[in-house]
Length: 133
Image (spheres, rainbow, N blue to C red):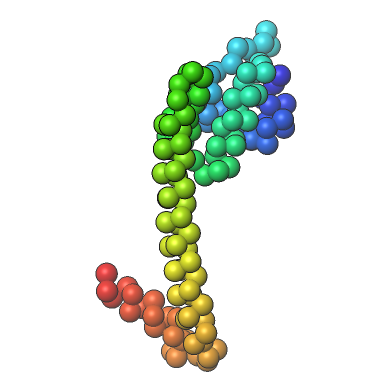
């Protein structure tokens, strides 16, 4: 199958597929006589795996590690579990940071009186934050 067909079948753009090839995550495929990329079922399965991992927020380095781990089917899945648990902890940390950010923005907006800029508490708070750094 050509790159456009692979892209449609996986929901991954052709440019992203090319990027994965350049990064070595996806092997460069064979070429047809007319020099088109020619992908097979294994490429499709691999790209679906990569897409699923990326959709869960795994970094490119983590995807590489998952792919390496997936290559040895007889291996214990402890390393995969550890990687997933570490990623979950990172997601939880980010959620806590975003929740804190949301609360601070809501607090600032609740004090907004919609007057002039010179009386704007949001601008004032941002200015004070800039002075602390």
